[in-house]
Amino acid sequence: PSPVLEVDGLTRHFPAARGTVRAVDGVTLTIGRGEVVGLVGESGSGKSTVGRCVVRLDEPTEGSVRINGTDVTRMSRRALRPLRKDFHLVFQDPSSSLDPRMTVGKIIAEPLKLHGIAKGDAARARVAQLLAQVGLRPEHADRHPHELSGGQRQRISIARALSVDPDLLVADEPTSALDVSVQASVLNLLADLQRDRGFGCLFITHDLAAVEFLADRIAVMYLGQIVEQAPTAELFADPKHPYTQALLSAAPVPDPGSQRSRERVVLSGDLPSPLAPPSGCRFHTRCPLAVDRCRTEIPALRTLPGGAGRREVSCHLVGEDGTAPDVTAPDVS
Ligand code: SF4
Ligand code: MG
Image (tube, rainbow, N blue to C red):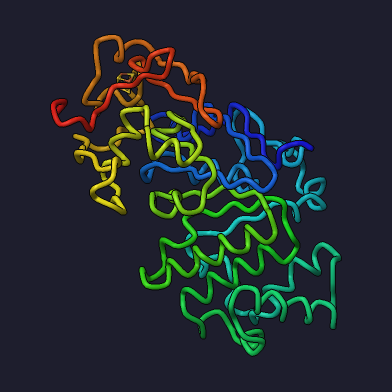
């Protein structure tokens, strides 16, 4: 069977007064059936734009998006409609995606009606079932979004997204607008539902603990490009790209005595503007290891040998055999 998602050479440029914003520049990414892929990076790295292009809230400038093997990149809204049930987006802030005038029951039932899956009593029964699955009570069906807490609203947007049994869920920072105290329960809910139903998931986040918990594989973005991609355990155990190493060095380590403890690397400077990305390696202005070549030569995203899954990295200093420099080694900075 074809992968649920194939993104190929995705590019999204926006015209702006002072030039072109190169939000996404050539992102290639695949999600297999039932696979969770985490897309991580600082805010402004372009990860949300990738998600919006995947669910067709935005249109790529170049490149393609295939869902279940079908190219949806430039499909008309009308042609897209029957496919809409295959992929859904859960936003960071559920308040913006839940119609305040509708009851929770109507909000969850809407996709069922739209796709002709269920109506009337059947739809009501399905809503009750979905509410139970996301840990809410049947009475919640009669409430309006503003009567509920942020965590409950996010549970409702998850119930709505899953009502039509999509093959792909795009979750863009689904917990970052929530109180820290409820973030874990919403993440646990997503993990449980994913395990039970086996949908593929593009999980967009800057929360490294969340992505380690949920994702099978991780792609790291910097300034509109993927700089490293690896199975989750391998990425955390042995990050190859200096940017990934710096990112992970700032993450809390569950067991400080473990092999994973590293010197914390604080990157100098801000994320450069996507209006004028640096020449050569886009990370060179902040990379503690940059050499002359990094300023002029663009490092290709190369596949590394070995390992349990495919690893890719774009850095001149990573050897053919995968040996990588370590910016977190105490003697580097
Ligand atoms: Fe750093 Fe150069 Fe590697 Fe880019 S290519 S990450 S600047 S060492
Ligand atoms: Mg974002």
